[in-house]
Image 1 (cartoon, chains in turn orange, red):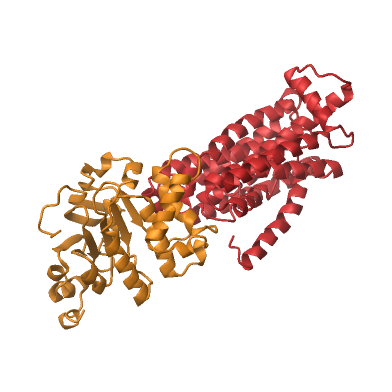
Image 2 (tube, rainbow over the protein chains, first blue to last red; image 1 turned 120 degrees about the horizontal axis):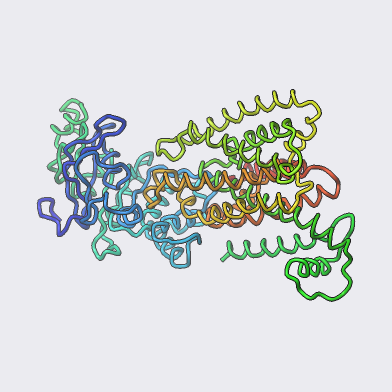
Length: 260
Length: 338
């Protein structure tokens, strides 16, 4: 879908969103609208507010002003469980205090769908296994998460998000700490995941924070440039990632920005 | 499923050991007679055969309350330990991590100095003082560390717990120095023991223990999400602030009641949850119920040894628990990560 078309309905949106944390304004004047099946990359310098934007879009921090819309509803009207069945947020560093098999970790993604004190049932196990298979990590399913390499752990984290069976998959720096090959593999996986049909009968929406502009240019149809607490540009990679904008946002010389 | 099978097997083992333990002692009573005595005394079953009044008294007035107490205390400590380990994401957390033990010890020590006699003693004045001390110390840690505020940091919760415990331990030392003839009684409380548990005292502690432990064992879903940290738990649909408050409150109530009844029994709450994880993996929904059963079983076995050779049960749990912990850590080095 092209960026300028109106999405069929608002899956994820922000309207004049402002977020203050500890008395400091982290985000202001953020408005955006994301539809089903979009692949959206969030880029910007450290401290610009990318992670806070993702936390606000997933209801982890409240809006100080304005509002966030999730699946056509204002997010503050939704229960935590409903939010967790709509948007899965994949962390870039999973740490566990105890030895835990990959299959048991991924089964934790079924928590928003569960009820009562019993552990994951047969259906949850099946969904977890399918998620592990989808990211190509079946050979890892019995391994202790804490013994995995950075790339393998990222696959497990994505499988955990997939097991949540949400229409939106959000990822905070899924390629952090990865080498070139693993970065490419994760980027390709995300492109492929966006083609899947979700339980809401629409294509999966992917929203991910990146530092590597090459991945964004190759694999994403839309880029949000976050700079100084607001969205400085929103469009296709060709529109947003110009030498001028890169130079301005990251504060680097124009001739070097032109080579990125 | 494996977790369910292991849990049911442990439960069967606990029932069998409990029946055996009632019969075991200086006066040995056959298991069938034990069942007959319990059936006749508690449920009025028309049991035939010869049941001596002596055996009935030993079973009903001495051994049974003590065994039920061991089961309740063991279950409470192990379940609370498992909950705190998941909640604080720390394998070294035990039920006393928020200062429960030092608060209880100080409360009990003060109670030993105050001459309590008659009815207050019968109802367990020392137990009540220990219970109040435990709750007070956790309330202090809770307040300073801001548990449930949403702003708390796990490291600072642990540090505040440690600081409060150290302060209370210093106060306890002062009380012990001033205690004179009561030093032995205070020391006995610190070692932990189930000598002389009576039905009234048991009932006062067992009710809060049973309620808190059963409720806590059903909070596994939230505690499972906590394994991934607060942020991830939020994204899994868990109300982190509320669930942390509920879990800390339940674990504290169970632990404080257990300490009031049995003194400071160590290692059960630290070691049993790790054993449970070895058997069924790290998901608290499996670990909590199995820890409850395993804690009951371990303390029952330890107390049976303790009363046979005449030492406080806390000494036995430390003698079993500490080497076991060392073995676990050795295994961790050899490949199994704790």
